[in-house]
Image (cartoon, rainbow, N blue to C red; front, side, top):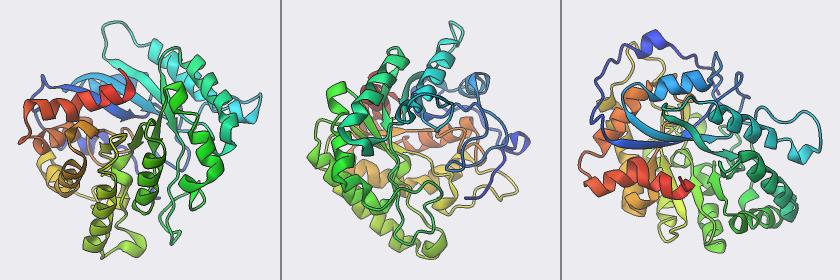
Length: 340
């Protein structure tokens, strides 16, 4: 994965007024970071803490709340290994509680990490997260991305077939009884596995991150139509399962093949909306607005566009939607999914 820097001066060249500034928004995918993130994420050149997050969400859009999604940092440095990820929940809860009164709600609730491959024993970890979250913990993300060619999965790629593994599913079964959801980070290759998982566990909410990250680079470069068709077919497999939700975003990543970083000028919201349109239309047709939500994926996507511009792009995408459908996409689906 290529390293990208956040270039504030370059981002400022896409100087746009905020569209529909009163529209209420819940951002369901924001990462606060103590230090440069581990290599599974796009490497950034500086931390992204409370002050940075507040500055971002106060740039003009009406952000009501945000959800912090795990970045595998601030783990406990001692104690049982399986409980160390609870340190991130402890850290993010303290940060969220430090936001001054009257400011937008940063990390209103959070998603952490627990090793579901522990099987039923992961219940101890989940209960520790819930306790550490002091009412803010909502679920786990246990990455399951796998590329059959092994070329675009990045580091920390799980072994193939993880989502169908019996022991892993034994751990997954512990989520619903505790009222927890599952954030799914996987590639298009695992969409049939997600559908099978949703059918087997209809009481567990599954939130697919970043449009299931279809990859148009590496061995898939020059095969855009073929890859898109395969991805779209996978999305349609999710249609029958109301417990599956979709986060629409994360499209700045190199895997989407748009090369948004190496431009003289950053893309405008109108350009981004045009690039997003086929993905957006496919998801809405398959799942409806009540199961879809826009996400920023900041600061991971910040090297490619500003917070103001990406939400303007989403508002352009939703121009033809009714007021009720817009409420779903920008706020209600996230609120209901994460119990805000």
